[in-house]
Length: 559
Image (cartoon, rainbow, N blue to C red; front, top):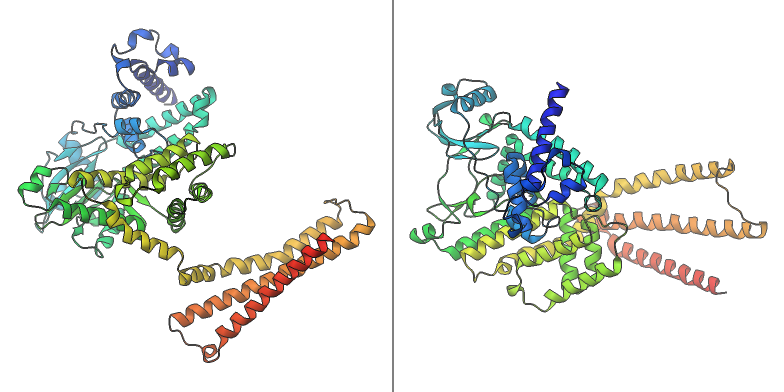
């Protein structure tokens, strides 16, 4: 069994090597020492290959290698932090149209997944698919209550094929990192692992159904937008059943004009939906291209396809807000700090070069009116700086960048004069207010109280362990006798100040809790007295005492 698997892998390696050579990347085959897989290296190359751009040649390789690599290329097109703009543009043109699989296999998969005969589940089921792609295809059907549905069916054995290809691709990446410096610099194995994780998520239709349910809850708070109803009873890892909907695609501008739709208003609705999902919900559509959005007769928008979604944690939204604030304040240090918190900055980064690039980026946009700033260009510039300095931006943030790029392209095509920032500004103000809301900060402090108490309870144990180690002689400190008394005296003063600081911290947390309680109208016995005013007075005295001690300490050092 293992021998057969290895033979299949060797054949696949050969196919990859041939595809690389055919499209002008024979030097990679040479550097990886895989020449025995392609004995006649030069004769396998396309005659016009050097007339094509690098991005076009990569696209041809992926299309030649089949469904797994096509999907990986499509996922990679969402990572402008890893690839330059021309390669991203070429990957976005990858064709995902493949012939449909046989109707007998469709019936077998549906019955196996749903555990019942096809005619028992559906009143009618069209065996000719509406659309066919590399992972699955869509069929129109009717439930027994007359509801029209669309059923997405996963291709037979596609998971096995993808697992084999991903395993082999991981081996290929490990080999490349051992022999090629650029592969080590870009941490190729990590990239392959990250893209593979995204592909695995797309293979799970039950996860897509859950995403659709979340978007449906979001749409309850929005006007003129909704998602098709999902029938979870008929959804599994390989089957997805949802309401069948019709409409005009956002890309069909002629159709929108013929039906009398206002394209400016549609652009406004679409941009509002995306900004609400990103900045308010923190859960957004990862691929809002025109084919995934329909316009109905009444002008409502229908969102489709929830296999690729983005998530922004509260921490990431905070870092994103701080990045925008730093750009507005012309603070290069703030920009670098925000980038560092959002991504993974390598230890050997050239700080001077990074600051120079950030200064250039800041100067490019600081005097430009917001109405003239293109989000796509700004996002690409930011990712270019990150890529040049090998800063790994988290996938959640790159998904955000891709979504904003796609949204801007759709809106601009609908109405070239439309200003996205008119829609973004109120959401941005709300995000800033949330970050600096005293009540929100206070609640965060209250949430952190258990951790503070854990820290307080751990301090005595840690000090006891430290003293034990000192007594056993495992930690050696060379101090002369005259210096020992002075050292212990300073240590005692430090301990006193630490204890005092902890008390002050606990007191501050208590005061924040009282302030929040009073702000939301919660009445306690303490609220009958001027506790808050007294507490603020005590806090001021504590702070003045700390300042006095610091000044006294500085003076003693100067002596």
